[in-house]
Image (cartoon, rainbow over all chains, first blue to last red):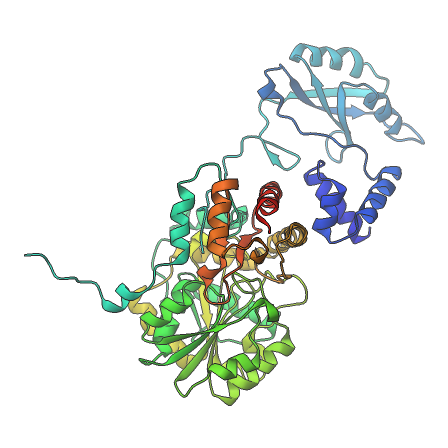
Length: 163
Length: 389
């Protein structure tokens, strides 16, 4: 991919609030060119969505995340894709990955309570045709996600003025 | 009986650092956004810190050779071959020092006779002049201005050479102006240097932070290696300021002299920092690239914004400083900085703290987060609008 696109993506991935004018200044390009390139990437679904990372724990809301290993019987012609699609259509399922190794699909599921997640697994997930088994791991604490450390203790400790 | 004054006369007469005065003013103001910092906003990359922790666990807590760890010197030698095709013998031509600051002090002491002159293009780093004085030399500032983008020209150099001139102290990329030199420009200076048989003290601590084109090490120019002491270190490129690890590259004759002072004054640089520096050189290149890329973006932003808001700013091609002019406001650099601090709580450093040629300019670090830079510029815009005549 061309450099400008990569540069824009790097900026947006770091901070999706950075606007075209600022990007133009940072990259030494024309604002019009930035706007056009972003539009193109949105149309081609290179950019899927602009979102915000939130530390839900600080909101006081109860939130549960679980990682679920799923073993699947692959199907002729479509492999794992059909089962994966049946799974990812559930809004509770936040991520679905096809994995190498001891199991086939890895899921990230979010729910309000452990019980809610467990019920979802038992009633919706495990009962899908060709799903052979599931193993649920609940997340107890999040330290770092998508490159962001949740409780970063490293602050700016520099002197305010130095030569 | 009151004791007599014990302080050395030369030290008593040293002018206090112009930065120090401003520092006192800033620390007493709350909620300040500082663009006055002379170091990266990144902390040292984790793998480097981790390597140091590991070395401590393994018990690396002893003195090293006076020259520094041989393995580190070997890595430095390799680095200079790869980067500049320059060969230095790790055994006898490289000394690991406590930052470039120590290196500068001991090299000046190692080469200067009482009363010999050192030519110092200014604006430049605050310790050059006092260290020269303390070493018995006479600092001769050469004023550079924005007219030549703060570059020293062969004529400026020639004009200040006297029979007493021993050395020229170059620093590029320059703190505070961000000025770099092309190879062609350096070759022209080299001609004059050779003609007058001068020594070059080349502070290249910001070498890796060069944005357009590539850095030329002064010693890599024809006939210059034998008359050049190269200073470099890990502080800026690897975000390792607090570790205090620098080094000198010089011929054996000069290195023999440097090591004499270093061994009596310092013994050796701390081994922990040396272990970290070793890891930095071996595995740190990707992080350096990342940080340079970040600085470069902020550089473009800050320079365009300064020009936009009416603080004329030349393009700094290296280091992480912009050095805009504040003449449009009618203030001196010091007035500008003090008023800006009081009214808008943004700290920048008055250019005259860096010597002649710096007045009417301010040094602004862009080694700061994008949010900080953006907010600082917003406040400065407001300030300039209010005061611009």
